[in-house]
Length: 529
Image 1 (cartoon, rainbow, N blue to C red):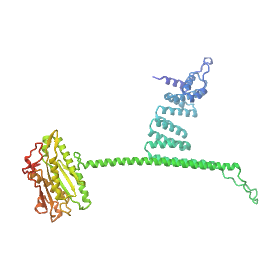
Image 2: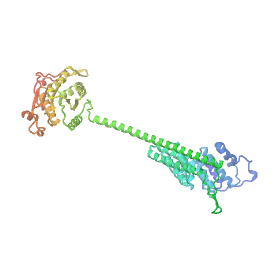
Image 3: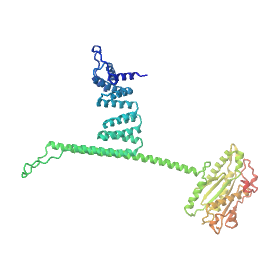
Image 4: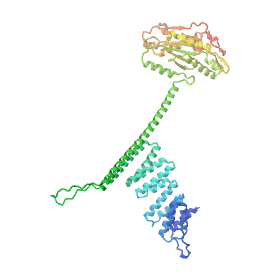
């Protein structure tokens, strides 16, 4: 169905002779004169709604001439556009522009109305294509500027930046410097809001160059022309001295000097403003980059910490110990001795079977806290795997190993472990070895770990809830080969001495009813594990 406004637009098109010519009515049938086009034209800028009513009444009257019909149609299209009825304005302006006998001036005005209507309908692609049909770069620039303004009001800054660039290019081609200078700040702000700071800085420098060129040109124009040399009637005539400057000349020179001074001040102010804007953009970019770097450093630190930390107990893991000891080895030999104590929780599998894995996790966390309370500054605590822990004591020799192990056993006897209201007994088997095994040698910590592990095996074989350890006596003939020797071979060769817990009755804390008989009978390591 055809809407009412479409009927009116078609009717007006018929009235201006686009479809078919109008039929003349007798003068007697014409109504009395009403409002005139001149009244409607004046009212259009003040009250578009009232002007639209007058123009529609004029449209209902028979027209006397072709020019009157075209002018009426053009004013009516403008009134539709100003009143927000963009679809009607677009249809009517399109009909006017397409009329075969419409002159160029009216066609340009009709295209301008169409452009405004398409922007109101948010048909920006159609508006851009229509703007490109204008032959005058100034009109094309104004059209692109209008499209950009509408897009900015709608928040479409990315598209608006493209149209602003197009408008500036048209004004540059036409040589309209004033319009260029009006566009520069708007385009700079748009690029800055889009985060395209490099383009914004480049445009600010271009803005300064164009502004400086305009100011210098106007200053030269305002300066008075140099006086022409006096004409000589004869070569032999004496030189006529110049007359002293009059008051008018002095006023002109003074005005030119003031203008040049004012232009210089404006140029300096503009340069200061541009430098301020550039520094602000650089500071904002630097601050943003620094914040991103800080977040990245914090994220990397968190990832590194979690990769070297046991998630259950919060102690270090194997990777942490490997890196820590490798870093110490890379620093060269140190006079500070280290003692590696390997600790294995006795019968931990029975804890999980009798009390559940939640109780086992609780026991691991509480034992880690117990070790942390005993560790000195500079010591390192590691959950080596499962129910095995490592206490790396700093500045401690093998002679102090028994005392450190007794501290752990004594604290276990004093502390009660509970889960779900039930007490859980806990004892540990421990083994220790110094790093390096022989003072002044280059034996790696892997040999110390192997000796400590064999010492734990000996503790379990002797009944658990006890400690064993090794101390270095003399390095093997080939120290490099010493790293491949077993603990038994080194002990038989007299390279190390095994230290055994003198504790006769090793009774575990078995408050949970764990099998305590295993604490006294020797067990093979394969059976125990």
